[in-house]
Length: 341
Figure 1 (cartoon, rainbow, N blue to C red):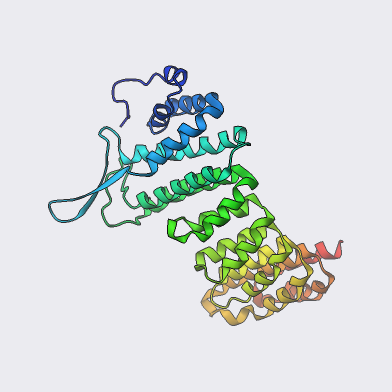
Figure 2 (figure 1 turned 60 degrees about the vertical axis):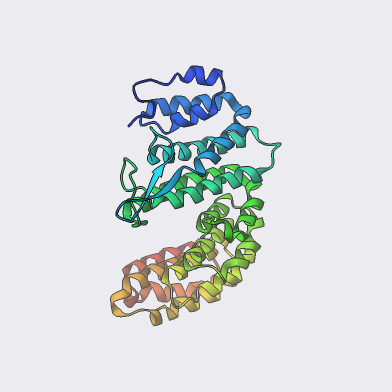
């Protein structure tokens, strides 16, 4: 379904009039060529597009849907304006936030990043709320079955778009993102914020991420561990060593080992060697494949750190058939790295 029906939008005329709202509307079109033309037009308008673009995205984020009670008593979700489906609103918002971030990076140096970050996070909130209301490509209501597989995929795609847009802003986004981590009442998606902080790789995020770790969900903890590894700051080592001993979550242990390897601090050597030995305690016989995956991450971390203390444990690991061929091979490879230094 095309948002302009039988009439082809005059994008050149819209650009001449600086009709940002109209151009953003075209971003939701099913015609990819029109979408590209509209996006190019927004880029050509340059810095003067920022304020109207922010205002238009705000409209897309708020009031796009309303609830009606059906005759059978169930809730239905509908877009407020005739001729536009929820899917078109979704598509327009997703492309508009990408354009906004690029324009801000190019032309927004004199502006406060907070307003841009807030509108992007608000877009993420809107995506999260609406993802449960879109059941198919036409965007009809999903009712109360709010987390179907298609909805998860749609939200994941939108989350990637927003996190990339935020990361594109760079270090100017760090402070407002850290503030957003504290604003739980706003409904921000904290996993996405944490991912973005890791992508930006700014050391200013290290202490705030360490501070919220203990009271975060297990999903958020995993993202914090990955982000700390991407930032590569030695202040994170103690927390990552504790995460390496998490008896309840093999993925947390694996991610902690990977991040310790990224940081490369020698304080992690003994904990990694100890964790390599005790990994057997956390698994049943049916879970040995997970065990091997975690051990491979640990020996890789030891190889990256490159401390001579790891040589003997890696020799033993390369010859321990009980730990599996993958662990044996990874241990031998990392042993060569250390001995070759």
